[in-house]
Length: 108
Image 1: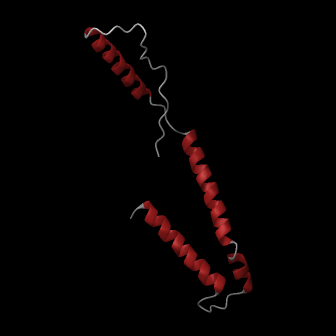
Image 2: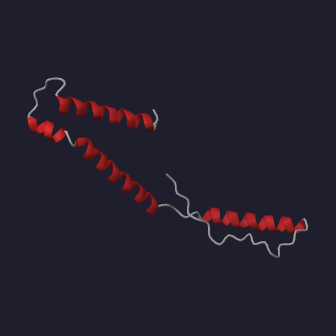
Image 3: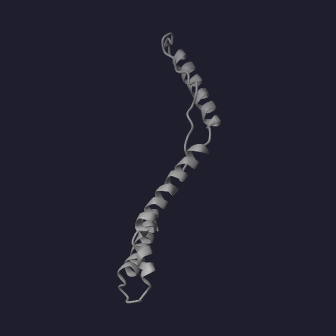
């Protein structure tokens, strides 16, 4: 089951439960306090989902890793390419292929 289907299943189950309680479709004769609590529940869930999303993105941004090995590998490849081009006769007076910093990669 894909994540999309999991989310759709969860939202639909919550929506059905909300509809049953709010509109008393099964004639459960629930106290009015339950219906009053159920009316704004979609808004509460939307706010909670937004807070969770912001926290998850913030956490992942704060904890992503540097790619030190990738930076070293890239530097070695650049050096190798420069040497290969020099052997083939390319003059590199005005071409700079140095990489001073490799940006961090984000893994989700």
